[in-house]
Amino acid sequence: MERRCLECNDPLRGRSDKKFCSDQCRNSYHNEMNRDDINFIRNVHNILRKNRRILADLNPDGNAKVHKDQLIVLGYNFQFHTNTYAIKNGEVCYFCYEQGYKILDDDQYALIVRNEHLY
Image (cartoon, rainbow, N blue to C red; front, side, top):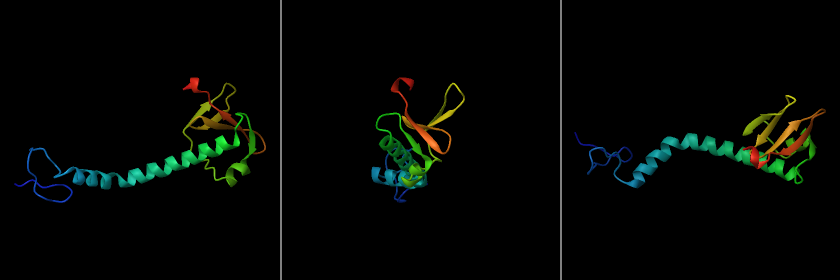
């Protein structure tokens, strides 16, 4: 039985465990197989980067307070964050990388920057 390339179906020559006739066919095959996953990951990463940028822009000194509406107007997506951190009093801080926030009363948010030594 003649072995054929998984991408272009051309006959294969060489090693018995070879699956592709060229690097181009191998790359094309794997890019196609992972396309949906890659698009999803790219979209989530873009949302996280945007969230981080919004928090960093609003918190240049490292201790700002903002209203929830201000974050919403700038396009902050509250469904996406990289991690959470519970502080001693039981409150939860939400982070996009090192930039984060803690929910206060009356839709106010305390913006915080997580120190590098905590990672």
